[in-house]
Image (cartoon, rainbow, N blue to C red; front, side, top):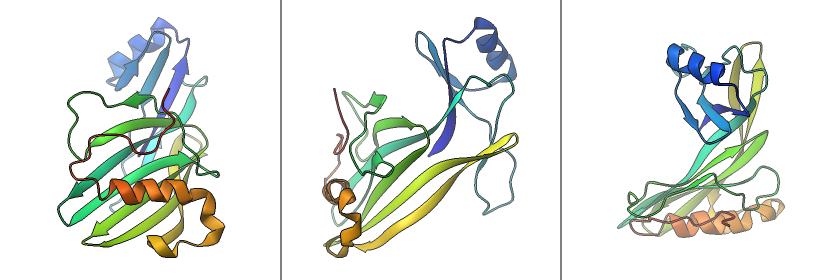
Length: 189
């Protein structure tokens, strides 16, 4: 999970400046997705990103993936869903063809807030972790804040988190999916 900047209808001068400064970015016809450089931090501190100059028209996104799968008696999975709703959201990238088992299967760029539901399996026990993530910004730095809503057995998930039930079920299934190579929870066109 990281913060990226999205710039639509960019000018060629911005692209040239990013290349010269060594910034990593992806480009579609009219949009640049720019990896923000990390600020040097102390060990065990949260990751902070430097907001690059010339990005006043950028939208900052949380770049996060659905990933994971299982091997024999163990597995883990991360499901991505709407920040407050737990509903499926649309990825900007879906792995096709020869995918890596238990690798990244879908990539999402989400403004404001996103939730993740992770499943952790050891033998026949599956724990679920529900978290919300949002971007914070101060001056020329940005970071992702995280709030844990639940961690514990799948079958004991609190009723007040029922809007995350479908995502939790997907995490439960994905962390048991041997050599998983597909998306379990996303709005696909």
